[in-house]
Amino acid sequence: MTPEQEVWTGDADFLVATAIDGEIGILPGHAPLLAALDVGRLSIDTGGGREEAAVDGGFLHVKDNRVDVLAEHAELGGDVDEFRERRKEREEEEEEREEEE
Image 1 (cartoon, rainbow, N blue to C red):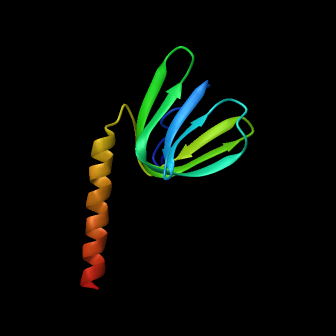
Image 2: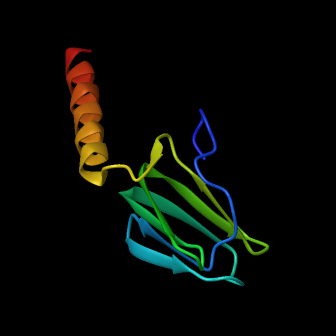
């Protein structure tokens, strides 16, 4: 889910996300969890196939057999490298603004 839209919803058998400290896998019945996400791929196995999305960070929340991913930007089939480049550009712009102040 992003501030603009819900990117994907449905039942999943397995989910893999890129947390800031490495990849994390979630199966049905997973214990409650809150994880900070890094720029990376989000893979969702649905039993009948696989959905992939690129996210630019955010949070993954697991509770009551439900997983919510909250990210500023996410795209199904998105290019992770493009997201990394965008993040790098934003960070550089922020540094320039701080130096000007």
